[in-house]
Image (cartoon, rainbow, N blue to C red):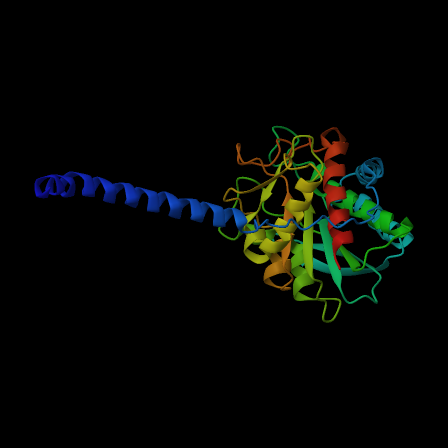
Length: 346
C-alpha cells in the first residue's frame, strides 16, 4: 500500500492539482465573461442635428450681381465704372434694409501715387449686440501683370473681387426678404484698393503691405466705435468651376474655431470635395490679416487655392478673369454654407 500510495502521490496528485487549477481558471474566466455581459453597454450618444429653417441661397441671383459689377467695367479706384459700381452696391444694401455708410479717404499705392478709396459698410439689425462680419474687396486689378498680352490694361475681376461681393449681396438680399430671421446681426464691408499692390516681378520685401489698402485704413481708422462682432469671414475668389478651398494659415492662427465651424457645415451640406479640411502650409496676405492683426476681430479667409499646383486659378490677374470663370454651383455651395452658419448662431 505504501508503495502504491507513493506512486499515486508522485503521479496522480500532480495531475489532480493541474486539473483543479485548470477548472479554477475556466471558472474565473467564465465569471469575468458573465460579469461583462451583465454590465450595461456604454454607448456614445451622438448629439442630434438641430433642425433650423434656413432660406435657400439663390445662385442665379448671385451670378447676376457679379454680372452687373463686370458690366460696369473694371472697378479701378478713381474711374467712372468704380463710381457707378459704388453707387450700385450702396443701393443694393439699402434695398435689403441695411444701414449703409461709405468710408472715404485717399491712400497711396506702392509707387506713392495717391488714389481715392471707398469702403462700403452695411449694418443689418444694428441694434443687436451679437453680430457676424462678412467682407470682400470690390475693386479690380488695374493691370494684367500675369497675362501674356495687354499687361497694362485693367481686368474684369469677375472672380477676384466680383464673386465675393456677389455672394454677400445675395445673402443680404435673402435676409431682406426672409420670413424667418437669424438670431444675430450682420455687418458687411466691401473693402476698396485691395488689388493695387506691386506688379508681378517687381516684388520687394515689403510688397505684401502694398495690397489691402482699404482694410488697412479701416482697421487703423475704425468708423464704428467699439465694433466687436463675434468673428469675420472674408470671401475672395469664391466662384470658379474648379475652385478648391483649404485652411489658410492666418485663418487657422487667429480663428481656427471659425474655420472648422464653416468647413464642417460645408461637409454637412455635401460640399467636402470643395471645402478640403486640410492645412497645406498656405498663407496669404489678404484683407483678413489686418482685420485680425489690427482690428483684433478673429477672421478667416475663404479663398480659392489648389493644394496640388499650389496656386490660384490660371485666370488670376489676367484678362481671363471674366464671367466665363464663374460657376453657379460653386456660388451655391459657398453661399448656402454661409447662410447655414449665420442661421445656426444663437
